[in-house]
Length: 338
Image (cartoon, rainbow, N blue to C red; front, side, top):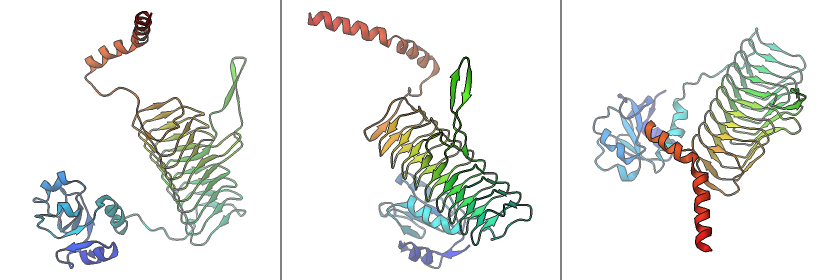
């Protein structure tokens, strides 16, 4: 696709300085751009790269535009502008509204208009596929599951039975939605499996990353609120509830029956134990371990900061002695008070 700089400025209501007829054919980083590329200046510290860039134009804040030698568009939020403009250049293939002859679709399934079903898909009885949705090759949709309108299911996704997706949901390859929650009851040295008889309910505008697993509940559904964004390889346990517009980064593990509020930010590789509650607007930094409810909004961290190994080993020895030191301090305070 090629667009003139003037067309881009008009479409996104941006101020333009320079030739509006300049053609833009792609987006790129400042240091790798070539003629025809549009680049984005996200930080003033990157202005030093502008003198060497081969890009045809740049998007930047007004405070950064002094001395710029190439055409530029002014935006006070360059990252948001990047996200919006990038939709015009997204190379994601448009799927035709057809059913591949190798797909197996139950006669008892309900298929909307304009639906694309790829090779070797299986659509089970009583499943519902909404209008204009795409089911990628090798994907499985279980009995009674429902997919809303304008959803995109990438290849090799598994939706077990009783999974309900809202509208405009994106699920990337390898995700498994609705597998049994990890529920067992110990009995005389063995474990008795607890049937997971409920489902998974996912709201509108949710995106789920590659290899992520969301388990079904035993007595209540697992619920993912509208606008939630989940990164790759995240594990979400049974009967967990995640509030609207919360974002969860890769390799995080959330144990069952946990409740996470709205507009939370959960960093990568965070561990969250079961049956706790996290308030709205909580931020948890990467590799933290949450072992108790967080009832007040704000940012939380755990673990030790990065340091050289020999320093870390010495500090760990001291860490193990903290309880003894605390007792000694309390004893000294008690004696002084006496």
